[in-house]
Length: 205
Image (cartoon, rainbow, N blue to C red; front, side, top):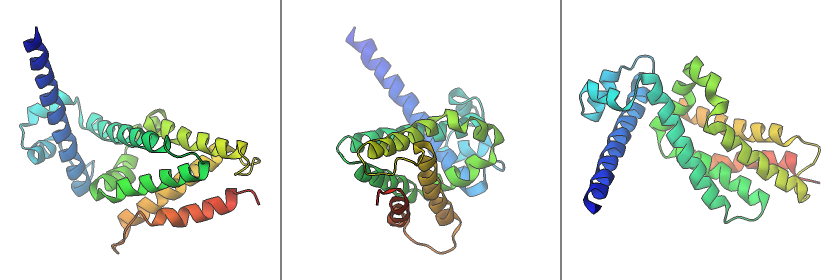
């Protein structure tokens, strides 16, 4: 009986590796050519596989785009929850959330281009955006703000969901500016600039 189990694990590993290779290739192709100008054949070529192999793992180019987002958000949320569990105060948690947001996208320019530009060019994706991992991400920020209000750290008259969207929106704009800028500069330090303004408006005087 052990043999089939090991064989099954090996097969799953191959499938996972192949999917990963396709997704990484798609990120590079979408960032370089643009989502709408890219073809499945371009992705297959970048991944070094036959066109038909892509369809064994993904039904369409649109599904590949969704999978890129879902995987990235799942990884980010998992990492964020793990780190936030080690931080007690709301200010420290929001600080780390902002840092992680800019660190992850700042470390992968192709991914940042896909997130900030290509994903938003798909009307279908944007309509489903809030139902995906983004909703969970925004909820983590909202809950942290609520905790801060309950502890007397943040102003209670501010709606947590509005404040969460403001913080996310500010971080999101920093990434977009970084992607579109012709001047090279590190993205992570921008977290401090955003948080200085955010905490200035949220903190109890």
